[in-house]
Length: 285
Image 1 (cartoon, rainbow, N blue to C red):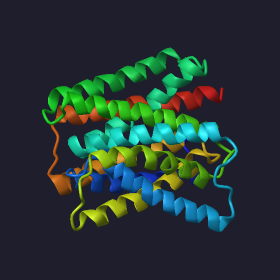
Image 2: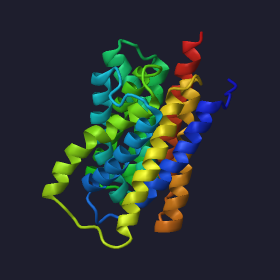
Image 3: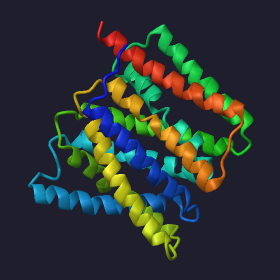
Image 4: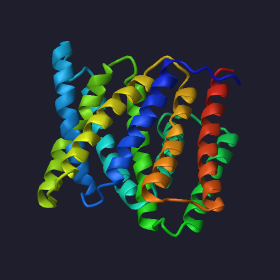
């Protein structure tokens, strides 16, 4: 099947690079708790989104408030979990596990939207599960607790992406992005108040950079998912983040992997990408 690289796919490629660069910075400041990192990231995004919407004369609160609030809530929970996994797992491993989200999105569609999965899709999911087992079994750096946290983060991301898909064509992308910090700031702010760690020196710049890069990445990602491009093609472009994550991990943290772990990563990616391509192919028949 020929895959056309359209505007949405290009936006996803750019989003993958920007977001992986942000994840690199998150991993570089393990002394700051993940909920505090999310708080600063959300606070920066809240200010940027508010100014952008006000300048454009766009109504802040949108028309689909319940869905927008759910997008913000799922995004907040998943980001705290995902940031915790970035800080405590090899970067490429955390990125691979985060990219399990499309598989969980398919499961949500089966459970809540009554969209049945085909037998081949279960096979593809099995490939990804085997990949996770290989990653855990052959990499002693992968703690079971943070492996579970990473998977839960992917589930939360899948829920957020499902809501974003439902909002396609209904809300301005910046409004969709705005609801994440609108929900995240009070939740993480309260948590941070009780477990505050004072950033030192360049850490302040790192936290500001995380907020700016995340804002850019979220807008690109939202536009990509709301584009007219094929969803499978758009989603598959996000897997370039694994390449960026592996290169960053090797260069900055000396993170190298055995052949078994690399095979596990490839199985996780293959299972997810094959599922996306198969779903796209069957939906056009």
